[in-house]
Image 1 (cartoon, rainbow, N blue to C red):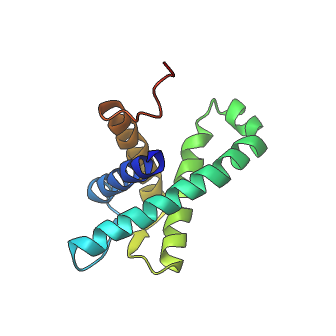
Image 2: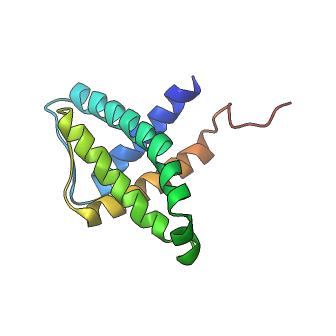
Amino acid sequence: MGLAFKVAVNAVALWAATVLVDGIELGGADLTTRVITLIAVALIFGVVNAVLKPIIKTVGCAFYLLTLGLIGLVVNGLLFLLVAKISGYLGLPFAVHGFLAAFWGAIVVGVVGFVLHLIIPDRYDEPWD
């Protein structure tokens, strides 16, 4: 259930990015196609962040320290571009046009995801009783 909650939060955050950021497009003829696309892209987004982000943070630890963590914004933008490329290869109607759109999209996804986790806390995030 926790995985489904996180995928749903990521899907809503990705939808917010498509609405708020020029250069991020969500295709699809009907609502069902768009929802399925958002869920699939949210799954891809979760896998990319779970697999690649820790590796990049470990390898680039010096850059994170040198830039006081600001390189993380660039890394998040590049990972967002990677998610869009993978989605395109899989035939999903999700596109990100350029690094700047990916940069702002990653920021929107992060902020919206954070706010949604505050509003709707996941029961798996609560401390043990």
